[in-house]
Image (cartoon, rainbow, N blue to C red; front, side):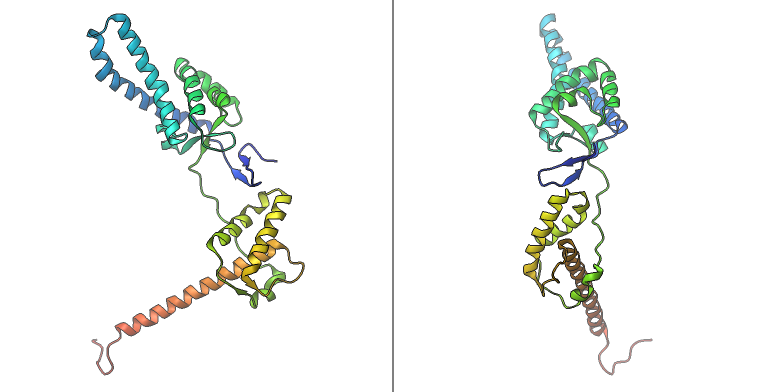
Length: 274
């Protein structure tokens, strides 16, 4: 089972998809209101208002109404479509509109949100949007419910990898372990798997662990003792790899220091200045 802040994708990996708080959404919406208000006022003053003497009253009213629709529906829809769910306020607050499955939104979702948003945000001064967001578990307004979207907090702290350690039962095996150079993609896959393993479905966790252990076995010698758990093997190999790379880096740094000292040493017989 996954919580409201998690999404289970096809690979059986649970992604952290924490929805934005009501305060963050409200602050982002306020910034959007200010930005669109400034845009409307500037374009109305420069483009629409000067045409009042050019068109008759009915035509000018139609132009003014079209200007409102373009500004408060067309601009947000275009912006969210092109940026995959961002706007001025959402960019400033680190938010993004995504589909319920965590994927990026498209034109259809943006249009639905924009058209409904015109009424629940502008026509009611945000009252309906605030009420529905407060009552929804993911802070959805009515436009999000109809479009199948919600606001995602994307500017969150990055998750850290779980620490590597040597399984006690594999300590003796690891001392004689010979590891060929691992492909970067495989090493990263194993590292991410070990971090996400506790969140995986048990069946998927076992299958992925065995698959990675089988792939990794081609790069290590000797093979682990019979009956070794795949995750224990993966953990042991990455731990040995990390320790050896660190020891090599320390040794190289020490050699570089010695060479630098010899380069700056004065020739034999030449006294150093006091």
